[in-house]
Length: 414
Image (cartoon, rainbow, N blue to C red):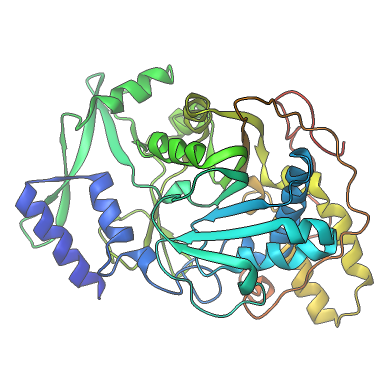
């Protein structure tokens, strides 16, 4: 279905109901079965509208595998350790994680059960496909899980409400039909008292004219994850900030962004169904709502530091010893460095939360790093960033951005 066709469906819905919240509009634009952005194939990665860490280089999946391997050990090396990836897309991250498990430990690889959850069926073949169980769902339809849940660049695409401050009061921004056959915004009373409750709970004093986003889906999403986990971890990776930074004066216009053919924009009504719509994640709320659901925060920090903590530097150094042509080595180096690039993927935030069983308390003892972290290499499924607009003269690893693990004991190498 074309963007104009889905746009007509959205407009008809707005006419029938008088107006839509932005969350309702966004849910249709991204997830409508007749042409929603995420119901279509090929939107992300190579040839898509934007790329993510898994598409930049398989080292991302390999290092996540190291983190999962550590979690497996923290839980006492259970005979079955279930990793659930939400928003798994075409399964590239699943393939990279499962492919690297054998390199870490045959026992770990045998215990690893991987479940890939997405709103549509993945396309394409993968060498790790036999190890991955796909589930088509918009939620986590499991219970009693011992293991971990991964949400990589998922929360930014949960439908959110938009608001602005007028005369000191919170007003909601709605979507209405305009006089020219399209859509427009109007301001009205909040559709739910939860909007004001959320902002008040954050203790913010927002200036006149401030615009922003509030994702009310975070609470039910976190409760769904917590209910599925018997004991284990939730690993969330996304772009966002603590609330004090997210709702700071320098973001007076909010953080809504659109993505179309590797170009960012701010008009959500353009190309409905053909462009992504996102906003930065409020990690303060993810942590507070997580606690309410039974998920205790363990670690929080930038992706660059997280990957370095897992052995990124060792893996990058070992790339020098792999027999490759100069062109292939440069392509792999560029992809790996992009994972930790300041101002890009390296600034994404990583949040680790844990779910503790009723009769036990988890402790994350220090785990010796793997003896060998051989770098995986780019495949045809990954993006070739060196052929794009990014400079390939980058050298070294970005400097430390502070400790990744501010919550209690450091669960890994120092």
